[in-house]
Length: 618
Image: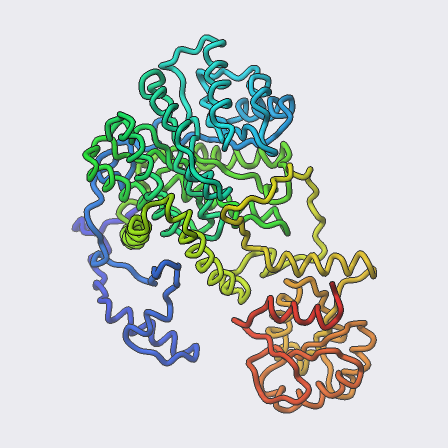
């Protein structure tokens, strides 16, 4: 409640309006206390965060950071949403993904989801992971097709899958004008996944059928997931989706559709991550960019991009998978605030195999809670007006448009895929990100930070094996650390214990606790079990304690002052006791007997891989 003084003026009027220079001066003072003597813009840069694509999140945004007018919701350039009402009428479409080869089990899962909040179905059809085309009718037994739109993910089985689906609608008496959903045709996306030559014949045929007979059905999907799942950045994902969409527009208009009719045949699919602000900006930027394409093509009225958001598989971890619930919640929140029309939340056990009923329940309830209990869908464009979000949207759109132009200069999406340009660009992006992951500059909770070596493994039925294809790879943030943990698991299975590291803490707890905790966390990320008994050692006790602990390597943990006094002697005693390698938690120095230094920003993966190699852990 705002309390007003007697004269009716807000109490805020009694406080001076601080200037940017005053704020910056206060920042300089705080940084100086932390040991960073920087002034001016350097002080502000010290608090900034690199986001990739040349973008930076600054610590403070003001009205001076406003970008171009984003317009109104439902009107070009559609930054604030493709519909004037946003998601306020019925919320976003809750779309669950299903990839089960058994029609009977798939039917049970579909009915369970539809009875508990799911509003559309995204089905894998054909191939090793999808239901056979012949089993599609059994899978949809009991599903009211006039109420639950179906979206196909059929790959090279597109033509028979579409025929089976449309025949099923006809058999059940669903009028053609009442059919909703998407046929999911994406020949260029299939090329990206498999490396095969794109064939647009079937996609164009069904687009023409939809145009003339099924007004509520979209034929093509511009799926950006292959590029995100290969390690691409947000700007690369957007740029490649634009290039794909433009390629489809050219092909559709070439077979007789108008530009507006062609735009209405497209649905765009994007990945959403736990970086909620980048997700919000990405969806807003995607609409801005596509509106520009539609305007240039003379289809301004049809420039409202229809978006399907899917929580990122790249961010899902195999260790401590319960944390994935938090990641997908943030990703779903970003999708909802960003204005996605449909949202798919991947189950938390997605990386482990086929999800169980509990995981699917949590996934669908994530959207329900955000809409019904958090009221996220009751506000149109909740992020609109945020100086940070508006600026980030504009900067991301600029970076994506630049990359889109590169692809167009290379001959378009098909040519860029064929030449290897797309793969090379994304591989370079992922290599740079992998370096940040290895150095824990991008921490992964439960994996590279705060891992639990005693966690009970979550077992799931293996997903059907998908033959390795010649397209873009699929990556995960936890890959490098998962390899280390797997080596530790094999050592545990073979010997009955994990690789151990002895923490040789010097001095009292007040002196060594910070670095001992840092070292324990770091080594656990590689599957090492820290041994910290006794709590403190010196040159006279280190050898005995190391031997009693049963470890093969040791790490000194203390302050720089105590290192100067004791590190050489203690390291020598550890060596004499049989330590195969001696680490020191701190910045590199000149200490005899110390092999490797571990510190914030060091290459953790390289350090721990080398240690396992030295110990003979396969």
